[in-house]
Image (cartoon, rainbow over all chains, first blue to last red; front, top):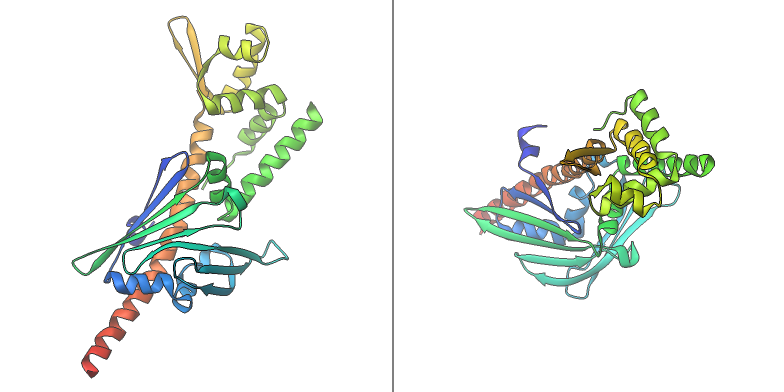
Amino acid sequence: MDAKSDRTTVERKSDREVVVTRTVDGPAHLVFEAWTKAELFARWWVPKSAGLTLLSCAIDARVGGTYRLVFRHPASEQPMAFFGTYIEVMPHSRLVWTNEEAGEAGAVTTVTFEEKDGKTLVVVRDLYPSKEALDAGIGSTDGMGETFDQLDALLVALGARAG
Amino acid sequence: MVQFSRARLDASFAALSDATRRGILEQLGRADASITDLAETFDMTLTGMKKHVGVLERAGLVATKKVGRVRTCKLGPRQLEEETAWIARYRDLWAARFDELDKIVGELKQKEKNDGRKK
């Protein structure tokens, strides 16, 4: 882990909530811009290490506006879509959106931007409706989660055979 | 990243290939319990429950601790390791995202500075 990555913290605040923090070297209005303009957002939200290709990205960052991200994953023939609605939009300080692709299990994401001395503290809170939804939601964000899901399925199948 | 050794994976498979033992893990996921509690919940003898807990304990899925005459069971280090592992993976994802975001904000800052000069 390099020094850069160490500045990112992740904490599970409760069974239902995960909080990520990081300080970005720039004023809040520019960081906010990178979170709300599709052409900028598309350049950083999907890191190369995630193994996903972003096919399209549409963002309408207004209260009641929607977003839609479509990805291709090498393990899946069908593209995957992530979408939701902006509930709160306070320029340069706060964004709240829903994650609707998982139906009722979807988290509500709150992002706050706090500027100090030309730098911006970004806090991302994902609040899930239940612990199970959080476990499933986090699992779906990366390849290892899928591996564990496959292992789980295999274990259940083995259990069914043994039982 | 979690590395599964062959022997440990075999032990896990064996431990989890029994419906009662999977039920015990589910139960302990909700709350710690004594062997007596578990025996009652699953309608088994103490001896039978001790055997099941022993299998889970050897696989690292359950940890037990004896206080006085009561042996308390909770989810074991394997479970905790997986929890730690997903937090680490999630952090890697976000660190990579923010590293890219840093570059973009850097560009925007530069652009703003240049635009400011032109005015």
